[in-house]
Length: 297
Image 1 (tube, rainbow, N blue to C red):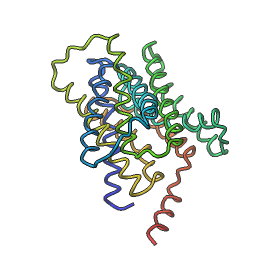
Image 2: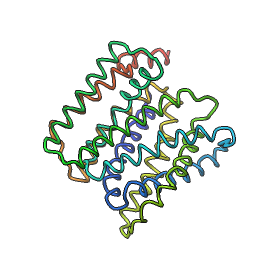
Image 3: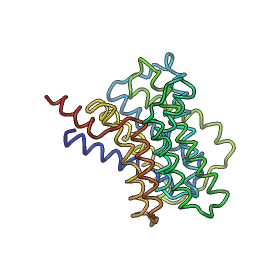
């Protein structure tokens, strides 16, 4: 991986890791539904500008079902679940639980799509469950009912990402930018009816609105562009390594800006979860290095 691509990877991990911090700041004030309606709307508007500049086409008449499905499973549902979890869980815990998404993806593919799991993948799942147990058991020995619901919401959000990843693999003929742009509009439409059930929050703090705008335009819009650029330049396998860096930045930003403590439970649990994820996804630094050398010859 060239230096420019490595820097993009670190920047992407830093941006996605910061999203949990901004959720932690804005969710208690705005509530889950309104926060993420604004987030996906700002992301959709940002990507609309980018798509217009790059002359990208959505082809709504042809792909609207795919945009709505991805908007629901990859954006609307997990975003609201994470915003709800952010009401009570630290940003570092949110980022670690979110890193279990590839484990859910592999499990869903095995159960519903008939894909066989290797011994390596099964070991990875076992490690993933163990890591989450260490994390939850250590951090929340006397957890409240709300905290357990928040943990369940975080894992459900990761499960949604697993469903979406399997669905996205079966799509064809849709450009990556169109997928990101269209799914954001799909999520915006899906969340609109829910706004009728919740009163509009009174937000006077510029810091809250700044967090919301950054969540939409930067943590969703800019992050997607960086991710697709990485996939184009270094391939999906290399871009996947961002999964292992996000919890590092999630914990770092939470500790630096929100004063969250990083206990040994968090560190051990996160390492075990990420090791399990690496086994399930087949990630290997040695193979990645060999592939990079072969490509450069």
